[in-house]
Image 1: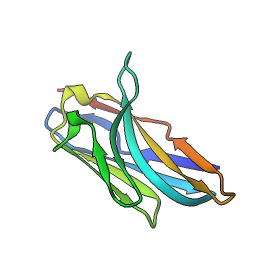
Image 2: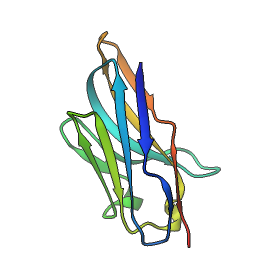
Image 3: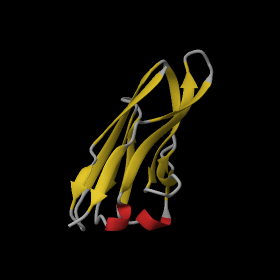
Length: 120
């Protein structure tokens, strides 16, 4: 009932930048938190950044000062601006959205994932 479409991944050299975007659609009444997680091969999926409906943000220590999360609540979109990328940032990045459906039910949805590769 909620679809997430991610875009913006790709291959970039160390020190470069990428911007990820995620758009949520469907039977959405409200969205609470929107966030980005990443998973490298053989690793668990970890939080990268999260932003609440009140625009409070949380960042993983590894990305503080380099990544910026933002959201457009009117369009149900969340973006992640990634600067000064490092090879350690290489992973599949997933969008996650928590909210409430028109039926009143609470939902959590994940995007399909987008690959980010940082390599020279």
